[in-house]
Image 1 (tube, rainbow, N blue to C red):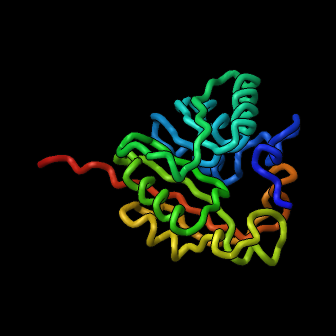
Image 2: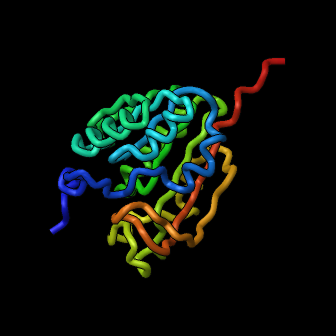
Amino acid sequence: MTLSWDQRFAGDAYFYGREPNGFVASVAAQIPAGPVLCLAEGEGRNAVHLARLGHAVTALDQSPVGLAKANRLAAERGVALTTLATDLAQYAIAPAAWSGIVATFAHFPPPLRRAVHAQVVAGLRPGGVFVLEAYTPAQLSFGTGGPKDLELLMTLDALRAELAGLELLHACECERDVVEGIGHTGRAAVVQILARRPPAQAIP
């Protein structure tokens, strides 16, 4: 039986660890000053890291249990988060509102994923940055985390189409060692995106 997210996040241990995703940490300095939205943020590891860098962070997740742990981690590290328990199918990303939007291993059915990514493109401020890491279909051969349903996995070609309108500053499919708690640890096949909404052009 598949555990619900509340069940997965129950207990004191952090299922995906307490430290930020490695790719997020490596590119966080490229997110401009301003508010950041973390999608499917779970127990808050990325949100807390970004808050410690000075961003006003809103963390979304469908699990109130996970978000309670996110707030606990934030308090331990001396920062505050805005958290909202919501299903992304019901949440509207405000247009041109965010300096950064972050999604790590946020795997949704393709129709929802396309809808969310369209809102991501519109939701960034000029110059704002989208950071994504997700598993590719090749992850099925590793078995080190992620969904087992092929349609939930992502490819670079699909993401290029879904994020049309953003500049892709970094875009690759690669293998790397992921070390994120008991949930994601081991060699993995991932796709990484660092994308920017083009800055507003000055009026001549």
